[in-house]
Length: 257
Ligand SMILES: Nc1nc2c(c(=O)[nH]1)N[C@H]1C(S)=C(S)[C@@H](COP(=O)(O)O)O[C@H]1N2
Ligand SMILES: [Mo]
Image (cartoon, rainbow, N blue to C red; front, side, top):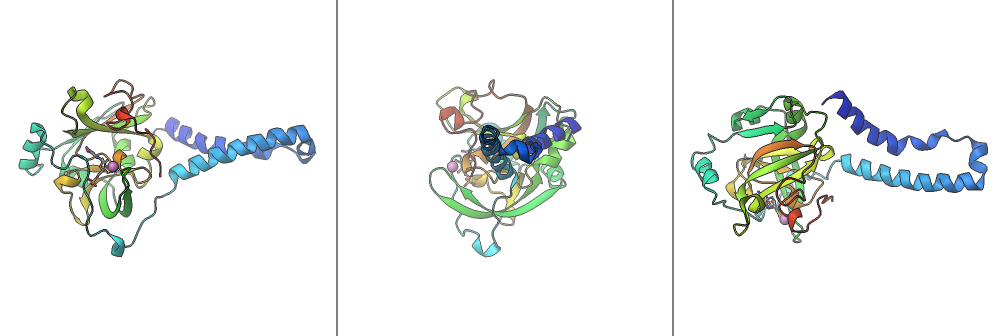
């Protein structure tokens, strides 16, 4: 990633961890200073917890814990004509577009995506509706893919544009599923564009040919049927303006777990 952004991400860590070690003992004996420091320390600890929590890995599980019956939720058989055509052709014509605020827009076939740096992980999926399931996912790591496209300095989020219309009763830009994540999640080592589930090509009900796994967040952030990844500075101009299909209907944008 560009040096400026790496510095920006590193800066988050430094701001959280660095501030306290500057006072000398005499100063810190002063009750006023002590009070200010403990306030600052409280803040700093909270900030640090937030940031270390954001980059920590989600729990991974042994093969023996994989759920025999992983539920499918939301869209499970998109009826959108463009998607149906792609599915009927075995996704031979599917391309993943990476564009927006990037230096080198990409358009990758499934075979090309499979050749990118990959990761396999067995994780638990938690849906906001109150069910969980453990699955094994393999896919291309999102971070290296964004580096390949070369994020521009203004990029702050990536938007995942999906193929499925989940709500047909509203204009298309509101009914189509989409999601967005920030760059901390985009570069998280477990953030992958999964093309395999439990050792098999991803099935249509689970998001074929490719779905996002963003393991530190709830189920609705894990966009299925991903067609396009757009780097943006802001997502207010997309969909209903809240950063995702469910966010536009009142769910939290940051669904950390
Ligand atoms: N494109 C798209 N992605 C989606 C959804 C959807 O309806 N469309 N549903 C979300 C919700 S609420 C959950 S819990 C998971 C379900 O993934 P699964 O069908 O593999 O269990 O996908 C998420 N991603
Ligand atoms: Mo969900």
